[in-house]
Amino acid sequence: MLNLNKLFFLLLLFSVSTVHAELMPPTVGTCGFYLQLEQEKQCGDLGYLKNYGFPYCQKFTFQEKNRFTNQGQRFVVKAGLCLQNVLWKNHLSLDDEACSEIKTKAFESHTHCYYHSGFCKLTFHDKMVVFSIVKGELLQSIHRKQALKMLKICRMSR
Image (cartoon, rainbow, N blue to C red; front, side, top):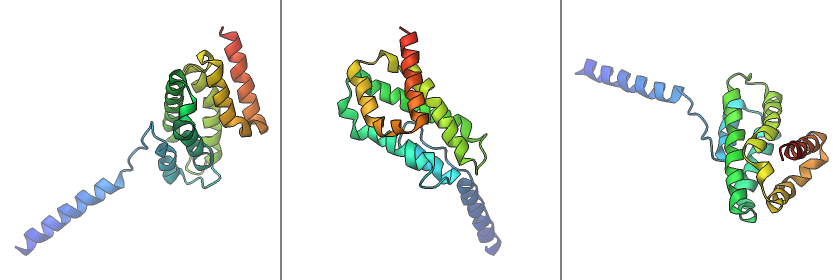
């Protein structure tokens, strides 16, 4: 009987340890994605995931959602999924210590994701809502360059 108990205990211990050894992937499509990925990458409060990705996801998805038309709300969902998918696809190739690479990859994906999610086809109203949400970021040159690039792409795609 004692050996059977030991065997059962070992089987139970093995099954629990293998379940916890695998990290669950972040839930793409939710703002929690950024915080889940942050747990893995540990970039800190000033890193892209906690300081930019998560707060802007919250702003676009919840806090400012009602300012958008239905078309604008669909754009927000598509762009958000695109931005998260880019991060998720690139996260394994990034060193755990490479928080600056996460920020770079994320910012590089913004123009691509906005364009392919239909930013250029948004109404003037929806575009102004987007710009009003990010206007504080436009003080930084990286964001101004992205905004100008996006506007140029939209002009060229008419």
